[in-house]
Length: 303
Image (cartoon, one colour):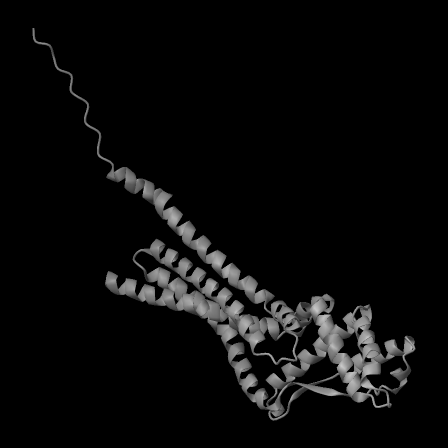
């Protein structure tokens, strides 16, 4: 194989590796981060102390209770009591326990829908009865008159519409397969591209810079995705709370993105530095230096 063909093949393989690296990181984040119930609950747990999230939960639970109550009490009279009780409940240890349990239940329900073909045509729902029961208990202890009339029924709320389940399941299957193969393929392409290059140090530098560029693009994609996600939310959804949830779920992805950027720059810098100041560079400079003039021969003095 000629040197030109080897360099062209090397450039193609390294470019493909750098292109696949951020997509592999994204797929791995979905398959091994979001799709893992334990990691999901751990990521969401700190949000139980976030003021915006607690306010959004308090408003949602309070509105849900007021819709269920029908005891002849005006909404204006009962509303402040219910909302205050719900807001007070979000500051308790019981709320943090209920928050973790609700997130675990929600995640399990979504995973079952994504992995089971029989879930097609049915929405993904969660039951709010445990949360409503705890708020009712708090209202009762605060001697709110309408507390005894709050019905603790199994109120199922759809979190994924039925029309979206099939598309999400297909996307999840594709990402699950990509998470297994894309990172390995990217590494294989990079190693092969460096191996076939005629100037391997230059190939290593190119691979490092390409990896850093992919990490930077992934960082930008996360930021743009946050803005677009919040912009597309309905007006009734609290954007600060939704932003806190987005940030919590993408923490690992942002960390991996910055690691790709840092690793790529470190590899490129190390390759460039060794090329400029390594043993081979010193030997080349020594061989290129002009030879010293030979010492003059001593002459004999004539008699």
